[in-house]
Amino acid sequence: MKFFKSHFALSRSQQNGIFLLVILIIVFQVIILFDIFPETEPKIVDREKIKNFQKQLDSLNRISERTKDTVYPFNPNYITDFKGYQLGMTVEEIDRLLAYRAAGKWINSPVDFKTVTGVSDSLLSKIEPSFRFPAWAQNAASSKVNKDHKKLGPAVIDLNSASAADLRKVNGIGEVLSLRIIKYRQSIGGFLSPIQLKDVYGLSPEVIDRIEERFRILTRPDITIRNINMLTASELAEIPYINEQLAREIITYRSLHEGIRTFEELSKIRHFPSDKIDRIKLYLTIN
Image (cartoon, rainbow, N blue to C red):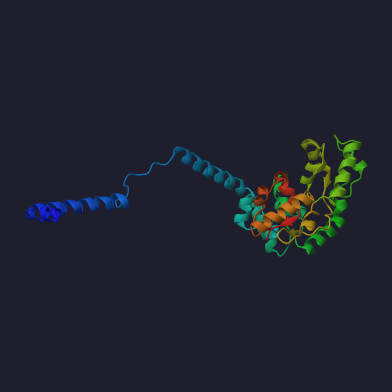
């Protein structure tokens, strides 16, 4: 009772002062508890995070630069001006191709493409693995090659029918290498492109160049280009350069990513032979 009496004994102004003080204490407690005023100072980004982010950007740029030179499978009969420019063809070479097609004629083989356009051997060897012709065109090309084989001269021999004795006529190829080439040719069912000679152990780039001077792929093996997203593990294992373990890993990657969209994705798969992607493209396609 004395407390209440002493309080009410205070003057009006003293009571208001005490009341105001209590209100201020409550307000400050609320501010401290709920942190009403957010920080206005700018956050400082760690330099290490900036460096890591920059490395990621650089890595993406490098990947972008590599994919610029990627040549995806295409039918050379439908090359446009822009596509020809991308492939590295000159204006004259593109014009020859367009004029040939405008006359209602078709290109059925890499030999036809070189004859019509006049492209260099180096450019042809680069883009030839990406050529895709329909089955009827390949059959027509094979028939034409067999008829015109004598016109090419005695120096030109079909790489897919050459004997070990024929191969030994090339400087740098002896008995061992000639038999090794024949054995490798049999293991893959026949050469689809001269670039597959790179996989024959012991053949130097110089010797491969000499082989290409005297040999051509005049008859192509009967191989169907198949969609990598539609094959089973056992079917993938039948493709040259792909064994059973790699086939299973491709299937696993394909399932996790709901399909494979580019050949470059394959390099992300463990044990995938990225250095042989140009040869693997000869047997597979991505639709």
